[in-house]
Length: 162
Image (cartoon, rainbow, N blue to C red; front, side, top):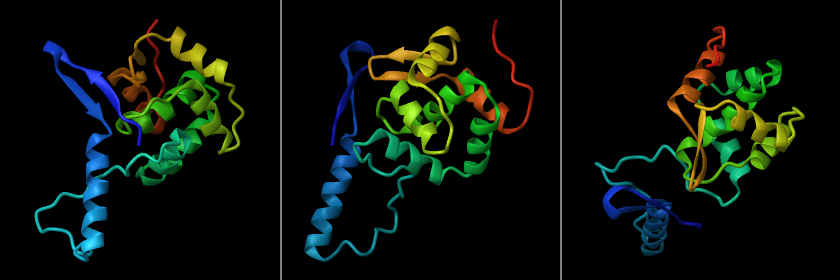
């Protein structure tokens, strides 16, 4: 499992992927001892599956778990909006903790029958500032980007900042 370090304020670091790794090791240890069949009463179920290492597979599984899956696919197929098509995989991958590149965006849409080249995805995100930001861990969707995707799913008129 790949780990990514994220530098926070005042010299602190956050290690992404460490919790999933520890949980997987504990589950393996519990299964080997024979006590892994029942979860503890107060244990919380995690919403995200541990990353598989393949970002496109993780995006597809995040889409499968999303309660508005059909709307996301419909909007991405029918609207020829490059910004929207670039933002939807970032929207799905915002809790995965892995980097979503323009190549991953292109491969994701090819699984659903949409031809979308990686340079177009990169250009759309680069030209429309404010919807995704470049971080050390790659592109991350911003609150404005989330609003843009959700407005498209609700069928509202999409407004872009000038």
